[in-house]
Image (tube, rainbow, N blue to C red; front, side, top):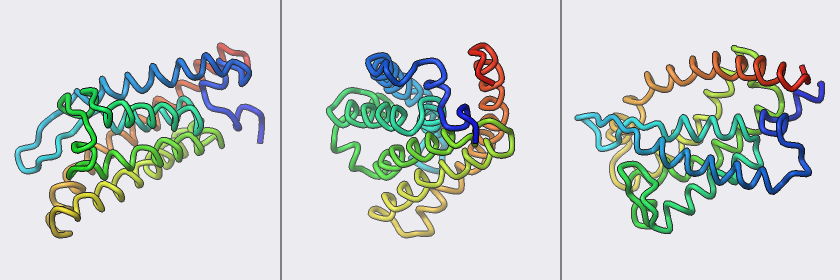
Length: 195
């Protein structure tokens, strides 16, 4: 395994010694996730809209790596839970975070960590492995989201409202990841003279 297969794209540009810059990038990405959460497409048959939030969470993990990506997502969750209007639909507060969609929110942290871990192991460098990484990193969001919904409805209804409607969109996310992540490495890695 080469050195470039053990780092994230952020680590390619910001050396480990510059932790202050990495903190700043993590804060910026927490704000980017909040912005993407406001991009929502309501579905008439479910109270859960399609948002840019989960895509932003996963890409944060892929780009920043497991440590700084998890920090960015943790900051986002903290900011929203403290009442800032950062969750979908400009919602905020602990009650919203513990509501029916709270399981999805709790799935963001392990999803970002897994995305970052896979990126640090080189899974984001090639189309097929990038698609597999996006699929695997999405699983904690679905699993914890479904568990959260089960507190409010039976399994069949939770699957119909909280899982099945989002599978086509996730297929699109997987295809985007398979294209964008390897392309980013080719462009940025080449510019940094590391690949």
